Amino acid sequence: MASDPTNPESIEAALLPENLRRILAAQSAEDNGIAAQLEDIEIASNHRKSMEFSRRRALLARTLEPLVELRRCARELAGIAELMSAGDAEMAAIARAERPALEAQARALSQQIVKALVTGDEARVASFVLEVRMGVGGDEAALWAGEVFDMYRALVLRRGWRFEIVETKPGDAGGLTHAIATVEGLGAFAALQFEGGTHQVKRVPATEAQGRIHTSTATVAIMPEPEEVDAVVDPEEVKEMVTTAQGPGGQNVNKVATAVHLIHLPTGIEVRMQETRSQGQNREKAWRLLRARVYEIRKREIDARRSAERRTMIGSGDRAEKIRTYRFKEAICVDHRVEQSFALQKLLAGEMDTLLDALAEKDVAERLAGM
Image (cartoon, rainbow, N blue to C red; front, side):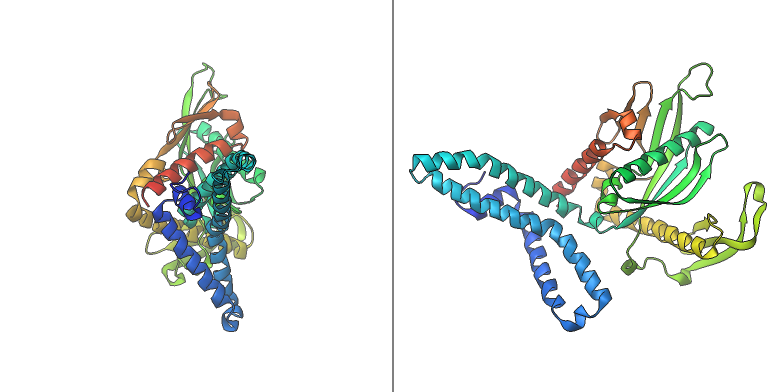
């Protein structure tokens, strides 16, 4: 495992590349600096500042806590190596028996550290907006969009995250033409960040008398909600209008002005919200969605400058990009980024762990190569 198996630092170096150890050293120094500042009464009494520092320390702990454990394993492995070379046959046999488990633990810890290092930005995201729209395929596309939306809802509930529906628009023959929800939970965005794109289904619709397979699509957008400190939208740049809610055909469905229409002037992004009869609730939901959409555009621009190669590898999440095909005849789902097949019915029931892990592993490997 190391060039000098009796030296803990040599064991650590064999598990973590030099560039990553430099990053970890900087993170450790930053953590110590934050700890010292939190002892300052003036900073400790500043709720906003102390909360910001606490969030940052929690993020740093994702790498620094397993690093402490890794170094403990390295010291124990170094001690085992010394025992094995000390000449006592009985002690050497005991040490030799203990070594494989410790080596496996050390490798697992190093992999945990690497993953935490390269996904730090995503870990900061506490919640995100999930948006599903019907694509091509008419009524069948609306039915499919409803199933995709239900798939994510089932996954979120299985993992114990919070799922809150913001807006849904039913299709004429069932399903959904458009659905928006917010998802909140530890690791939720990191797990689902690559789900944005076009989800294609191939199956025989219930209305197809000849048994022919049709192809329909639904588009998914995953938009991280920015923290308040990010302040991504200036209210001065937003035009707000309040109107009465509109039903099918444009008729007013109530006489009170409760629908909120926002336009972000610099980008032209528009949000309309009339889901509830409360103007205040509609305004809050509209602003959340507007901030997420503006943040998504700006984040995409930053990502494009930082790492065009990574987005090519794992997928940018653009809505026009086909990321997955669900084939009902074969009962499989093929993800075109990892080129693997998964059990269709399990996926639709929200059992997406294997698929999401495969996407995450590919992304981590590509990011690590670019560090």
